[in-house]
Image (cartoon, rainbow, N blue to C red; front, side):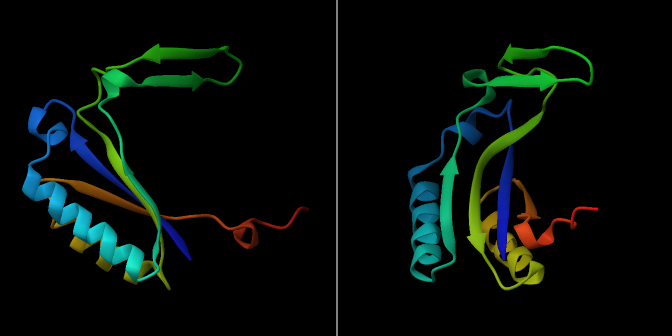
Length: 122
């Protein structure tokens, strides 16, 4: 099963976007280990929201786009990984080890919907 892990950082904390060399090395080793175990599909960090945009579509309304930063957001996605695990418990255990690399972080774990997970057409 595939799982998406997204880690959230405090948008207002400059240190969250300027990792130390020690952190970079720990994360690199963690990613390397994941690749060698054959569970890693992809993993990336993302830039702060000031470099992004938010696109919205409300029912019956036109699509809008707003440039970042998103002042209403305290925590924003700082990166993601897509990985293979046998079940949710294994994914959560892995996310706990991943979170331990950080001083402060929130990691959301979501199972990816496969075609077979979708309801059959009526």
